[in-house]
Length: 280
Image 1: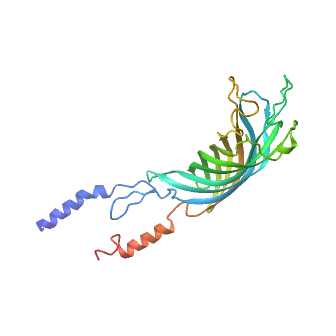
Image 2 (image 1 turned 180 degrees about the horizontal axis):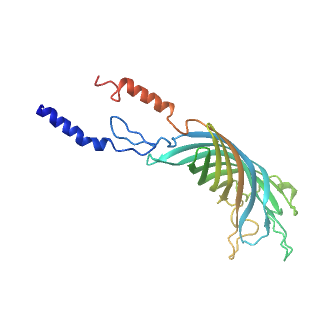
Image 3 (image 1 turned 90 degrees about the vertical axis):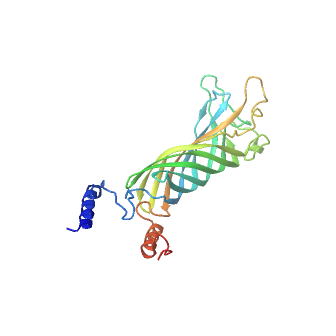
């Protein structure tokens, strides 16, 4: 036997164990370089959707201890864009979402059962603020084939468009639907919550079961209301809202599998080669 042929045959036999190793199920090998790909990986896909639902609101106040009830309002709407991304180009659990929302915040003071005192702000025991908000949140998601669990957290900025005062105690009627000098219009704070989604590609139904906003913007200038500055209290009132929303989302690209852009690139590489034909 030719000596050169024998050496080639022995080298090929020595390489067989490395080539014949069984790959884990669900993975494939590129013929040019050894690249392991998970076929079930979620794409970097995006979606847009509409959300609506009710809101309940109250205040964090200083001094604290005022008797409060939850103020209910059925009208909360938002238009939201969500972009799913891979951390380290591998972990498909993260993304971000940004939106434009219209909702309400406010308060409803009730009578203290012991003192029989009902707290008021500007003479009114209740008020509802209409607010436009722009939230920007980190979006965490854990996907199954037709189910998704979601976590959201991030800041928002808002502006109070209008006010309607009322309740069991009512003050000056001239300010019932108008702001006064010490009212603050700008709002900002933290939004967060959890939810789940039912997924039927390319449509998703989102249920944000516990979405809440904690405002860091007092509804009035500190120490200006309901009494002047004292050495005992730094007066403020921060809204706190809970939203229970239902949303319908439409995927703008593929959730699983190869996207059309990926398929086009693969077809291009097959025809022209990854060197774009420079060496052909």
